[in-house]
Image (cartoon, rainbow, N blue to C red):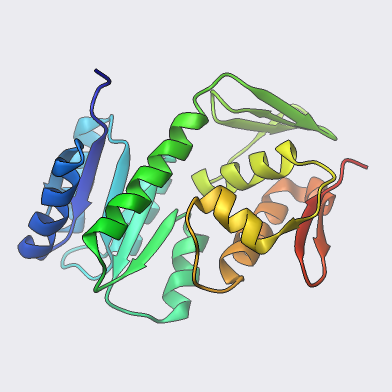
Length: 226
């Protein structure tokens, strides 16, 4: 039997933590809890083997954004943000900080579990030993390392997945819907901001090589190894 994936739930509402935990435990996950941002970081750094973090935005002592920044400083572990707000600025901030998924309260626990499974499934796929290259960009999927002309580039988990998807589909025009369904692994009912935000950030981190990701007006994007 494979070892259970370890998930950290961070929320100041004990009822919310119990609800999410019950559904995750039922799905064979190992669950740890924290009731505020400071405790979350203590647990995260003490454990050192957490596979995914479910993080509430509004919390005492330290909010979810700050916790996300701290974790992202040292780890690319997938992060799902929970928020009661539906402000699109919050959502964009989350993606800028390297959040992998963003779910507004109230939500269906079953949907949350499905998103968790999708993200962990994608993460597991990247553990296969595979190397990709295009125009000076080298990707080692197993080590989760990207280099440009030999120099390492620091990408978030989602930016890494997006780059891999582009490189695996070089020269192919990819619609935003196709990118969302392939990289996010579920039917996304929002708009194209999710993709556009990540592509903008990815292009910026790739420097001159970012120009290889071409915008296909009215459709989406294409990676061209010119």
